[in-house]
Image (cartoon, rainbow, N blue to C red):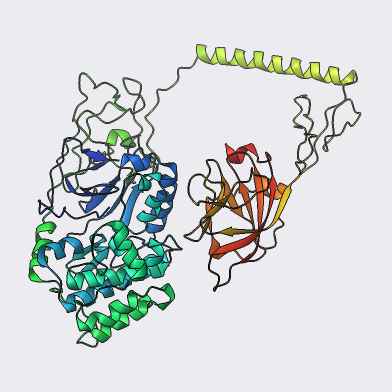
Length: 630
């Protein structure tokens, strides 16, 4: 999903919302549509402070794929750690929503793809600054543990102060869904690396190859490996050399080294910046205000004039005589005129009135739970609201919309309750307490008498103690009686024997393959995505992909046993292979109720034609605790 640019047909930058477009996304009021791509649509919205943001709404088909959601959530968490000068930061997201979405900072500039299509190839000086900025962006992205996987001209935006790389990591989530094999195209084959086109392991060097392709495209206006059918382009990328005849001489070394077939032969990001400096006429790369051609800069000016946020109807100043269906006012009050940020996004923060902050008298009608905003008022986002200092301490406004989770540290002000009447009601409560106490005492006496007649109780270890009184558990014991004096019989611990484990030694699990713990014998099978119980992801992860499945990386020196795996709660869905070493152990819980213990024995050598890890696996079938598979 290219994102924050208009389509290439030359239509207006800010398109009006169509009939099938939403008007809000999780409280963000949409002002215009910016574009669309293979993964969804992109809209313009605003924060409460008036800053423009790009809302990327993922296609419903992807949202229905559980594996896509899992990887999308993982990539969003990683992307939120990326804070670079040449990236568009992810500022908000909801991977678990009915339709997943994320919000990034809006960049008022065309994509590199649009700029080249409309205005032709860029000057050499511009390309050098472009590549250096992209290299800095990739340095930050790779530092967060992300490989972009889909670096192409439509994912590079041109701003007045340099490029912005967007959509990093999203292609990894898209690769996980079966939709990519059913006619849905993600990415452009012309900008893939050979190892990516051949289905081999993807590394940061994959993005360096794509960077070289983007540089050649920016300097010539055509892809280095030509255009045409996807299969034809991919074949040329893997087996043929690029056509660099149109690349300016000052860029030839840079582009040629980046487009090396072998990942190890490609330059590092630091070397790329040095090559840009060496090719530049000046000794130091400097980014002037006019680093872009005048025609491209004019587009930036046009895009900076974003449409004003949509107006939001103010809340009513008095309680309406007939409340809308499904809406219950939380307090009978006439709120003060709200202070509104730059017009537009959602309802303004509610104002805490003097009647709310002071110890108020009982309202004339009981307060009911808020069921939603008034008709015509969009729901507000879950942003923390500042407290107001009152005589009794800080008070907070009501949660503006209960459909979103409460922010950390946010405590809504409770509606004042009516003072309970005393007198007759107190007498009834007192009588009820006396009756309950009498019943409890009678029950206790009955149990004590029953024990005295010869009832056998159990001790802290669950064995008969032969005593006629309730036993008291020893401190720190497990599976004991309550010892509270209620007289209830202590349940006996389960006498079922622990299941025997089946051990499979020296399994060579190749990247792109998976294991199913219910198989006997357990053997690697092709496939890394699709709800498998334990897979070796080609991206460098061990994955627990089945529904209800999880992994736990045991500490160094911690003995892996059935009891240890049952007791562990440090669950995760994937573990980076880089964190594993010889002797480390991983507990595996499957959604089908099996428990496994992986012991890492080694990894493939650098000169091996395949990437694999050697492991021993012990499987206890149907032994997973119900708490970890629920």
